[in-house]
Length: 167
Image (tube, rainbow, N blue to C red; front, top):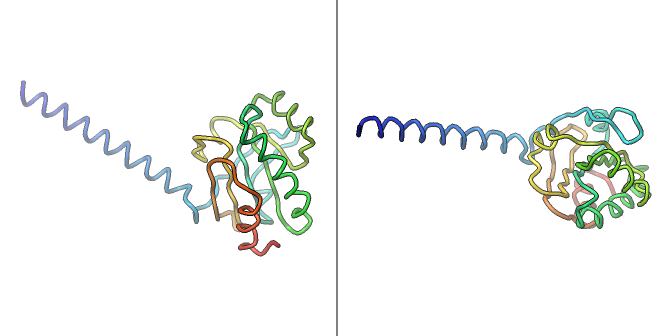
């Protein structure tokens, strides 16, 4: 009986270590300096949005939802940045975690002009989104240069983009 408990406890311990090890590998995959996972999503305009189609320039990727108060404040800031910096060589892409209609309605009513797609659990999972908004600054090389969980102010994003040569 004691041996059986020991075997069960050892098996549980090994399973837990494997879980932690795999989680660490997944987290490491999204650390600053790692390649950003590509995705292919349906845009609000009906066109397909693939992240790697946007990495010809530094790209700001934001995960958001219309019911998130921090997102509601942050998206207009990102839209101002897009209007100012897109001609200077910056892409901004949004991934809504809303239903398609809720996200579209929000973007339309707030006049957000940068490309938007409807996300899925798969994409959010590959970026390990645990809260929104989540912002990733991705270089032309497709590598994550910075990442932020929660609302990010304009000066912080501008500072990150300046490091990539965008002023």
